[in-house]
Image 1 (spheres, helix red, strand yellow):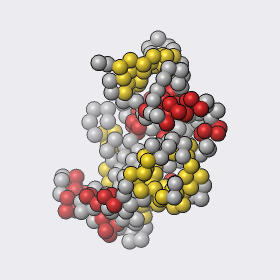
Image 2 (image 1 turned 180 degrees about the vertical axis):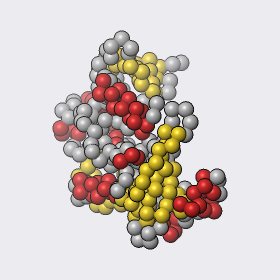
Image 3 (image 1 turned 30 degrees about the vertical axis):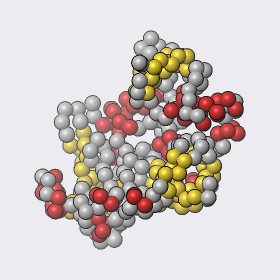
Image 4 (image 1 turned 90 degrees about the horizontal axis):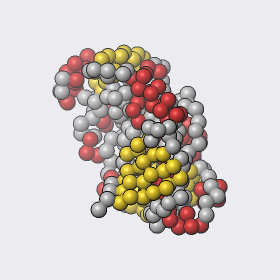
Length: 305
């Protein structure tokens, strides 16, 4: 199955599945760009975690690419010279990476220096790059706005190069936060940091704004940032009872909860199995616990002894 078919399969599965986790269905945004659509797009090198900066980026000058892909780390482009530099993609070339696996050579030119570079995707993703349009759109949508956490714990803002400088900030699900800054983070899967003010403290919320430069098999029908944030106060607009919120606050699940309520309380399941008999039931697994849903309602909880 090639890359295009994988993405099509994921989209069809999600559209047909009864197992969506409570976020309203929406069409795939045009900002979700597959590698074949990157030509002409501008990316920037985001920061790397401190323990990876010495390695540099696994992207090479075009003349050094064969040595780089052969394992020569000395020809990787250095971190300090390229972090936050902008590149424009000039060409994308498909190649076979094994049985039913297509990958891409991404040719680009660094805008400030004119240096010609090339990188090679892995599962449709090229590490180290952030789509510049995603950063711009994230700033337009979130900067100065209120958001509401779907997480129980946030990290303090800390430092890009020193994760040890951050601390854990416990928060309630649905806690209000003010977005006070947005910039490129350190991970390709979640390359944007929203810096929020919550309970008088500055914390970071790493997100991806779109599915661009995310592994094709991970794509979902809803924007990836929705896994971290509400844009409205959930305790006001969802209409759930006080008892439901007490269960969520206590990290508990009880029969009768909906899928989104369970996911807010326990997080994403380890696995989901849809009933082959026509989507009437689905089974979510969390470690030793098995939860069975009939449609959107939790009908049984089994704990292995």
